[in-house]
Image 1 (tube, protein in one colour):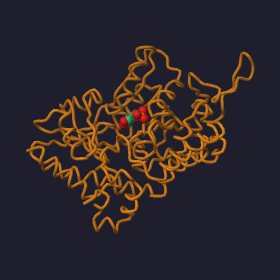
Image 2: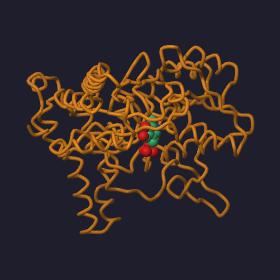
Image 3: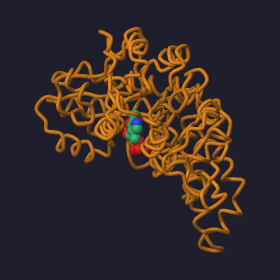
Length: 407
Ligand SMILES: Cc1ncc(COP(=O)(O)O)c(C=O)c1O
């Protein structure tokens, strides 16, 4: 059976037209793609948009091509804003989620003794950035404890907010290293109550779940476009609230796009989140992102949020019963990232065994998640992350493969 044809009868009748969505996704013919937490498969309209723009650049020139597609470029802002409940003026394009995050951090005038309050499951690069700020500016990094069932203990985190009055509260919605979904809106309610600056890393949740910046109560939010939004690589965005814009936060290295050099000794920053962008843009990528977000919105984020974690739950159940496999995801709410340890295998050969069976997966190591993997006492795990275009047949087939490999 070709991978593309593996939709079951139930899936043919489901809310989403899985057969059509797979037909729109060339990768489905070649692989069982369970690495959406790494990078989703491009849909044909995204690919076509990008190829068309490259051809246009080649034909008429790069600057001229971006001017000709100014409507498509502005669609990037309107599409993202519509997806996350913001306005286009609050959105900045970025080359990666990490770059968006670092640019946001650079806008905060940290002083020695300031506290950054975060969680034990925040993304590895964010944790490294906090340690770098500690080294350079003497900020203190405080981690809220986890609840016994997994995930951050929100009342304990709120108590730490009252005790430390942190300069920044930072939470990752879904970490890279497990299926955990953190209660970012609950954390946000405490931040709003205490008027604390709140930065959310929504890299794994945008495109997987509805993400609404007002409901979360964040001041800043970062994401990539390449994962559950199925956009191209080398893309991301930063949401900047009106509160932050009005308060005058600006990135440390603001450029001629983010500001105007109004006199020899003066510059004036942009009123919008454009102050967090740079002048040079990968326009093909920006247009591809706009097409990807438009595609996601047409598929429907509510339907995606129903199907994608349900496929992951099915996979988790399939893996849990295998002797020698330990599913590692813990927490009151679990999303589309499935992680497990397997007895008797080393990481590279295990992943290679799945590669050889045309199953895309990813490895996570202790250095991606010092706290979480320390608690779980594992040095590595395999991560499988389905998306809505995967089928239940693929999920069951991969669980059976893992069972065979575990024997
Ligand atoms: C939770 C989380 N935050 C941030 C990032 C970094 O994204 P990027 O690679 O676009 O910088 C990732 C990437 O895996 C992630 O999983």
